[in-house]
Length: 439
Ligand code: XLS
Ligand code: NI
Ligand code: NI
Image 1 (cartoon, helix red, strand yellow):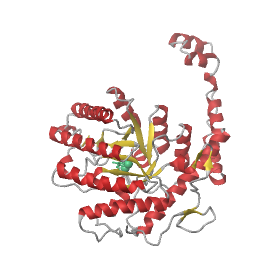
Image 2 (image 1 turned 120 degrees about the vertical axis):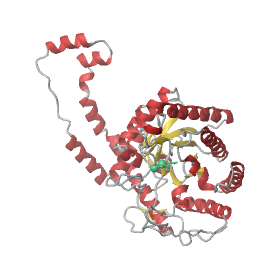
Image 3 (image 1 turned 45 degrees about the horizontal axis):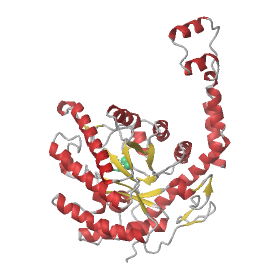
Image 4 (image 1 turned 180 degrees about the vertical axis):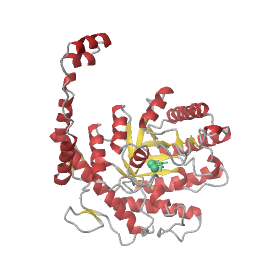
């Protein structure tokens, strides 16, 4: 067995006074927060595509990443090396999960039969390696957007052969996800969207997307895969109008087609901000609809309008995200998958460790702050008081459905004044600052 990340041993928790960039300052996996350890709360996952496939290429230049497997030329040998590297990396970091697209783990061949054979070969290697590893599969997914055949989409392609191809691909990817004990299966839209209505039958494309998802549900049941199906909303990129715009849109879509019981959301922070929402907003919309499944943990750059997939280091975001997760009762099958890539300028292998450690520490800290906020209940108390008017009198009647417009008009005609109270936003923001600084 080769070692890929030489000179790096198991990352330890050294506490907040440590200056060691290869140590956790806040993430202490066994520390108990409430009823679970940090490791159980956060359920971190490494994203195979960014960490083992990413090269740092951008539209202006080739890859910059230096990787210990870069001299391996045979594609299947390279795929096997990356399996090894993945397990070594996750084990050294103490990350309990990883996630992949079918095409991340094995290179595509000239036809589906050959491609599936390659997948089987790599899946066997992964399965074998999993026997001696604590690392598990959080979710699998399909890359039905990279190959040129998906130029006009997959399940929303105008070409029925492409729909069929995508179906065959998801079928196989779901089978291998099951085989590897994956706890979820993700559908991210890829190129499911459009550029112009001048060439698009939107209604047929949406109906087809629903047909496709229904087939996925049926196949899931047929093979007895008990993972959670997740949809990952994204408003734009690669297409101008992605159909899965945001959580609210996806929930509406699922309800239209009677699929809402079968899917939950995989919320990505950077997709939330691209949709002009906060990460917290998306999590809340999912939570109140009983659809909070999992998270793609990253962050965008608010000055840039694309999916920069940066490692999450913003403590406000990690705190408020964990506040939503805890309020929703915590993760069951989901977790925090680092759908994040090191910057093009961070090209050394050790940067992969630094980046994950930064993200893990930011979420660990976020978890502790959020837990303290919820324990103290100050924000909850404020909100409860803010809505007091619905507890008694006319408000109670509204909530209980006892009044309509006529009764309300009568009530208002007798009302002398309407008295509002301050929303105290700045007080609450200062209180949040205090929690982040002092918890
Ligand atoms: C792309 C998505 C993608 C999904 C998995 O923007 O975030 O990486 O998470 O297909
Ligand atoms: Ni993602
Ligand atoms: Ni993304």
